[in-house]
Image (cartoon, rainbow, N blue to C red; front, side, top):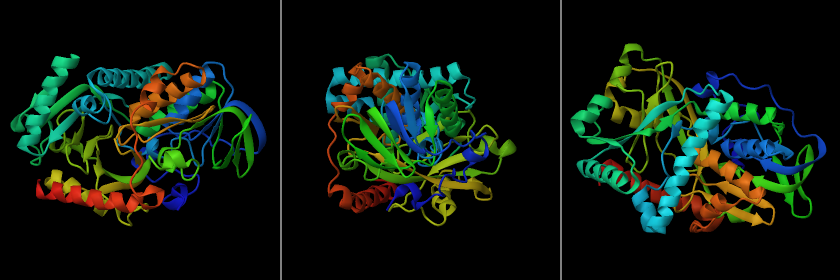
Length: 433
């Protein structure tokens, strides 16, 4: 199954609230015939757009190929949360790689947030960037763990987060489902598709040649590399694969370690005065469940709520029904609220829930597998690959050295095995275990 076309119309954005509230760029023409470049980038999400932009700013000639539209994939559909650190929290990272290297990855995470904020400021990207992401605890034990984590981050990293007991957290998020939480005001939330389109505009202005509706079918090693689409091919000295969940069969080494999965989001009708029934501060929220619920208010007063579970690569027929179930567990008082938009998207995870950055050849780099923490990670990975092409690879090499095991069962069996595992953990959530 080709995930590029399994759930979406060719060359079109999904019918999301994001697509309905942003001015798209004029369509870029598909690649036609042969061309040459210093670097060919495949995939025009955050990773590819950032890589292309930073390479062009350094003076390299760049061709960027996208099968659909810029920001078509997870970059234009996600929850819009710019989180701190990495997908693994610092306590887990310290156990995985040791305290010293965990500190390096914390600093890289802080750099990723600063990079996104800097690009938004430099290019005047109107993406409604707001400070604040809260982590919500579904049990008293989880609340204590979050309190301990906030204390750990303050003592070891000098990073302050506000802690809340159940009553105080309801003053922030008036849901009966949570027992407390922590608030990270150094994290942020934004309109993800607006960010992607802003990066594409900046890349084009920097000289990047962008081609949409240009799916890559074949990559041939050699000097130069040859990257072929249905309409032409690019001969390039370097290749960057920035495909994440849509890589398909372009590289089996990456496919064995990076698993595409789907997630779903709804947008309610504008809530007006009822926004206070959802959030009493303009921050985003993510909870502690294995199938994570994440939500925030839009700039026009809607609840944007992500969650639900679906196994297999096709989207469910009724996304609203899938997402409304966890939404009403968190906000039962919104049962009468209309859901104006519902959409799905494909992201990618790794076994260790850390990004997979890899050298696939002397002049071929790849970054993917952001595991739900891709807004900052992906933009940063693009810049790290741009630096690595130019011989400055310290940041890239730090991620590339992380352990990244293959999924059990190989490319063919990894999805059913993951479905079984996720079903078990989802059941644990429901039983409160």
